[in-house]
Length: 205
Image 1 (cartoon, one colour):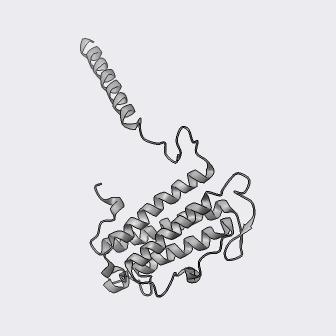
Image 2: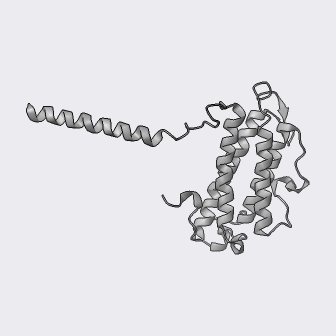
Image 3: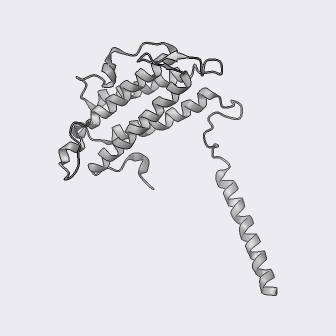
């Protein structure tokens, strides 16, 4: 009985210590999905903006991690037995597609015209330099942040038309662009790893 009592006391002490450590470790961490400060409560716009920032960071860092001489890489070049990568986008084309799509998807939120360079979602055919493509990508996300900042409860689900003329809402467009970018980020990750490069978001894990 004495040993049992000692064991229970020890367990309780360890539990309290663990709880205290956890409390200290998480004290300064923001709540998941929350953007804003105690003096600035999160809004619909700030919550979606944070989602955009997350994918922007990962896609831009992936672009910066790939050497310029690999921007024309696609898995088709590897001639992997049993695979079918014929005609898939190169790394550069993936990035330009994400950027051009960002403009096309987010532009109806404010009604601001997308740049002429969107080229049906392909981006500029003549743009091949890493620096130019990366800037085009960053500018497209800046365009998204600006558009999402206009969201509020009154216009969020108000019927509007997409760039293709289909009925939609600002809420759908705001979140779909981020989802679309995440989709292509997953492909960019594979392109990096096929070239022996660990994606920045996965380093140190």
